[in-house]
Image 1 (cartoon, rainbow, N blue to C red):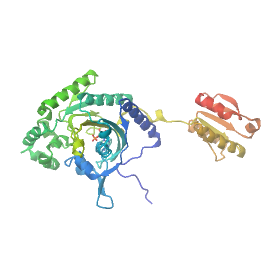
Image 2 (spheres, rainbow, N blue to C red):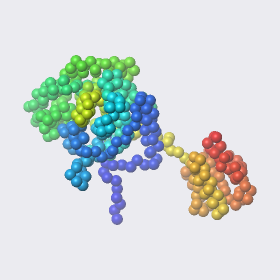
Image 3 (tube, protein in one colour):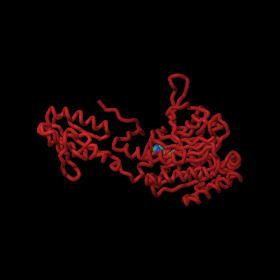
Image 4 (cartoon, rainbow, N blue to C red):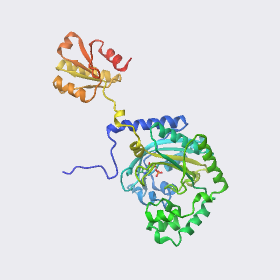
Length: 421
Ligand code: AMP
């Protein structure tokens, strides 16, 4: 019978890899906590309308990539393609703004997008999302970036580029949209089918298109940054000044529009040359109109999402750096020794000593081979002779030295040696 494999674009994170994931997530928790953010866990499934209203109808995500299905009734639900919308939904549903107008939140978990799988692009992938709702000071934008860079440095990511842009606001976007539409009108021939449609519905999205003809055409298009109103221009300049204060290098990418409609003012990406077109490791920006658009008060927000798979594959951290090998292997020979090994190993485990034991009654040689394979730090050989003498040899597998230990005080002695207590 043919065996069942994982769904295309969905992958397992294997036990030898999870140490690295825990480490990266741990660093994120530590740094974001120091900056005053608290973890929130939101559901994986949301009502489809939440994403339609926030991410936007004309985006690739909403148009083509969402896992949407009817929940055995007449309600449509979607596996979340990103977390900002869910966090804002939760912020509103729990009226967090009534308790504190400022909410600093982060979440870590899987996202789902039905994209064409390739290296660095999956249909289930993980993000670390950070959201700051309730502040629009440009220093907050810079602070988010400072925190992000600090995180990337701690997980040893180098050779990345920070790109920033400003997407303006409700005041400066309409004149730009008109200029862009005027530019694209009459050039529809050179655009792909999707972009031809977008000229009228959502022309900004043409900047996002990966089709060569569209990318070429957009090169000569007007840029939002030259249309910024006084408020947005001022905001952007202050963000840049604040980044300069921290000597954070960046480039301005006037073509960056980000793949979601809700962004305003500062947007940013951290990119690498690694996977050709699939080059963003982190994406984020300000979304001052989103909370209101989802039915809440008119409060600003800013956030970013780090792609964990991309981050981890770029990081020089090795799986082997995080593998925890057993502290002790008890090689037991004979029934009585096995009984003792059973109680002893479980008592040691309860006290935090990672202990392995073999119940299959194998020869000493094969048990020692297993201890070696598991890369156990110490082995203890327990046979009839040892039980009679009430003493056993504890062997240090690193330097092959041995020491005799009393069976009566074995537990404490081993804890003392292994844990250094
Ligand atoms: P976005 O929410 O599209 O701004 O994406 C933020 C980050 O999530 C990106 O910079 C990537 O690192 C990661 N990401 C987005 N889509 C995928 C995907 N299909 N597979 C793996 N990582 C992804």
